[in-house]
Amino acid sequence: MAVNQTKKTNKKKIKKKKKPLTPVDKFKIETAKELGLWDKVKEIGWAGLSSAESGQIGGYMTRKMKQRKLNNLEEYSEARLKRGGK
Image (cartoon, rainbow, N blue to C red):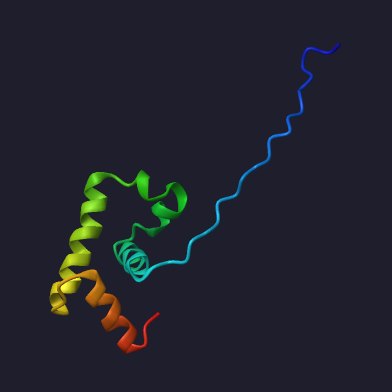
């Protein structure tokens, strides 16, 4: 019997279903693209960002909402839908 023989297992790979993006997710992605962090997010995921980078995204999102005189992300979503944005 060969030493390097591998055993076959009957484990099935479970694929996670992709959830549809919410307006908040779209806003966060849009912001990450504007800040040049989107490539890093695609490679290693949101959890791979440093706290400074995550804070940069959150701060920029807040700044954009204040400029548009919106109080929260729900208002941003509504305003975006009224403009015809996706």
